[in-house]
Image 1 (cartoon, rainbow, N blue to C red):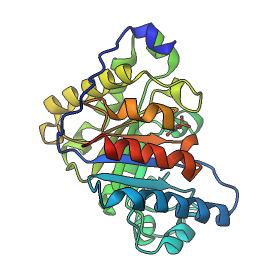
Image 2: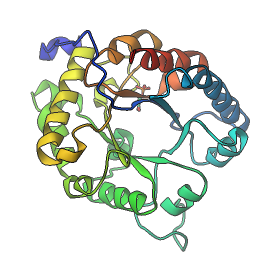
Image 3: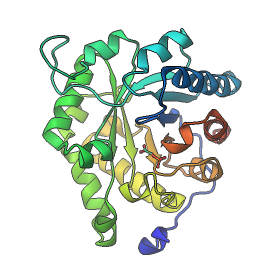
Length: 278
Ligand code: PGA
């Protein structure tokens, strides 16, 4: 399928223990409908994570409820072992003020949020967010003490034209000076090929691992202190492909959409990444 287009299949079957943190992050997007359902989902995820966290402390889990549900989820779970992620943030550094519809980075921080997604393809493509807006969001988040999950990924026609690597590296290059000022505790990279998001079409573990290696090589040269940053894969990650992804040397975690909407499907993905480290 998609992977045949590239003929890249260098799966590394044995994952050496590199000491990078493993991440399983759920992006709930505009789901679920009610606050009650969001709280129940969060509690279910927390329960699944609690079963792993003591044995595998190097695997961490985050959830990204929608903005309407963030506070209720944070309150219902109390002191979270999971990280709370915001799906978006205002593109300026004001904490409060006349910005209709915005949620500021300091407001998110005050609500207990730890990370914010920046550059998700649904923001780039549906909302037309270009690198200057994304850069402003990144800066605002960092100034407020939030970590940034910087999402990059090519579209199908770009992959078919052999442009995948150029596109992904250009998306990173657009934020190079900010990345140079960040530590590995402040940033995660999520590689999410657009053609694999919500389509059921996953990049093969080999293809994903190759792109992760390219990203890591680029960072190693351009931002050497981020050479060991965690790089997550996203795009139709499911319970049945998580173990193969977790076995790849350069895939440090996953950003999960559809399969994060039930703890019964999210739980096995957590377990796959937690146990892949041993
Ligand atoms: P998906 O979404 O797992 O439903 O493909 C991933 C994402 O958009 O982060």
